[in-house]
Amino acid sequence: MDFTLTDEQKMIQKTVRDFVNKELKPLEQEVLKNEREGRPGISREKVKELRLKAKDIGFWGINTPEEYGGANLGPIMSVIIAMELGRTFVPFNFGGSADNILYECNEEQKQKYLIPVINGERRSCFAITEPGAGSDARNIKMQAIKDGDHWVLNGEKVFITNGNEADFVMVFAVTDKEKGADGGVTCFLVDRDMGWRSEYIHTMGEWGPATLVFENVRVPEENILGELGQGFKLGMKWIGQGRYMIPAGAIGAAERLLQMAIDYSKTRETFGKPIAERQAIQWMIADSAVEIEAAKWIVFRAAWMAENGMDARHQSSMAKLNGAIMANKVVDRVLQIHGGMGYTKELPIERWYRELRLHRIFEGTDEIQRRTIARNLLKGHIKVGELL
Image 1: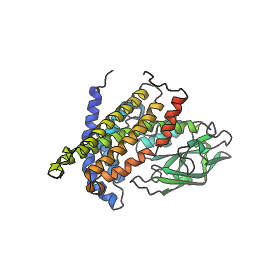
Image 2: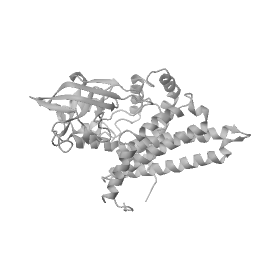
Image 3: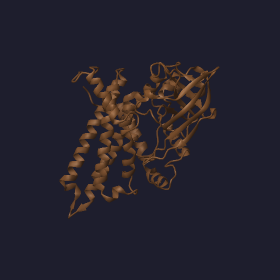
Image 4: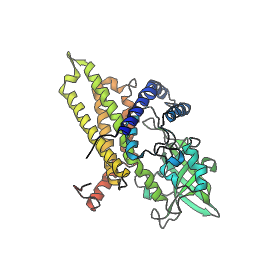
């Protein structure tokens, strides 16, 4: 068993870390100021500029197949990169990528949707969540009714990331009530100019999702993604990929936060001594370090399983659950160590506090992950102590 990163992995890790330190961290105070004043932390033009800089050093299409101009680095390297990007709260990710289910496009759809997304010419969003169907995605109610060579969509989707900015949506609707999620849900590619609208949802964090409203939106038959009735499988494929990537980013944030706490504890004095010499502070630092390390290896194992063609769903659920809880514990301790200053908007700790709280909710709540993990064990799908 070898836990050592390869020379290539170390090189990529260092390059990304250098990019974060040189290009992203210097923007942090500007991002905080913009957000305090009600503006987006970083403009789309700046993101585009940064993505082109990253492209010049080879970071384009991290998981995009080579045939589409990508690097196709795989799950393990993607996790390493997510951890490095997580070290800053500047909202940025590398360009040249597309949602994994967009590769299910037929050739005509690829030219209209997949390729423009990879090239950064169009923006997509994924819409399955509804007001009454969040964790229980099988319970979606949005209808698509056949009318000649079109489908007419009516309903509402909520908490949709990029929903306010997207040019088109991958939306899931019921096409056969009797079958429901078992063969009666279809995914449609729906351009904004076909008639749907988005409404901004204000949250406690800087993440601004959208409500998408569909009122008699007509979608041509050729805009079905994949097969008629097989959309739920596509939806679960999209969601499954994120369950080990989300905690990977949280690990990077937790490591940065812990280092902030270590540095601050050495300079902040109470009663004539640095608080780093206080046992209460030492224990918070020690517990955080242990929890971060444990989360890191659960995530790496999920990525390793995915990279080696194994079923990583159970491990990914454990990674998501553990990583989200860990990050929230760490940021809470770090804010406590900083005291009143940690609570202000002068430091990014309170921002991370709000941002990381979302990790316990989206793409499968803590409760859903626990349900999945317990069900796998109780039904014998996973054996306790099972060897790799």
